[in-house]
Image (cartoon, rainbow, N blue to C red; front, side, top):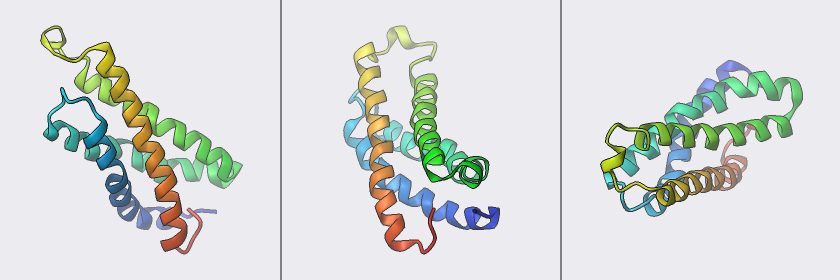
Length: 137
């Protein structure tokens, strides 16, 4: 059973690791129509929006009551879906979209890259977490 104080203690450590694991995927994979500045912003911003929910809210709501598998299924579905939605709202729903070079093809590419970045952080982060963090998280 997770205590809120444990989760808050883990939050900054986990955030930094998640950004470190996801940023290279986003920098290399997001469409070239996005500037490096936008890609770096996305790396920090998307994780900042979803990570507190995944680490502070969902463990208490789900893991403590339904177990690890349900928690992971919900958290690892929520994060990429929410990040895709946020990215779409920020960069594809702007007023100047008609003048933009962002197309349906770049949208699909960007969404797949965001999902891939989350998958990398789940797999690599999970392995690192088990090695470096003494408690099950």
